[in-house]
Image 1 (cartoon, rainbow, N blue to C red):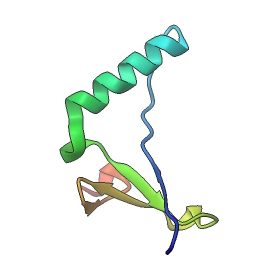
Image 2: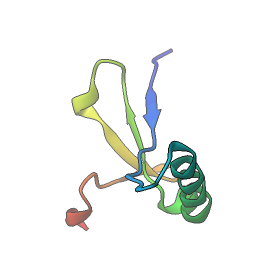
Image 3: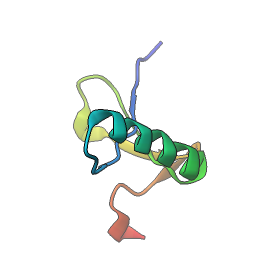
Length: 65
């Protein structure tokens, strides 16, 4: 069975790591699967990374909308 890496990354400004984690979970809860992109790729193929929102593809560049 193929392996996939999945990542959610958000740029968060915070005074501490703890505050950044709290903000991260707040964003995850607020945005949810309908708006928060997850990035998927096979190990060793980072340049082939795809973005998904919920279970469908999404543009990697917000300027493409």
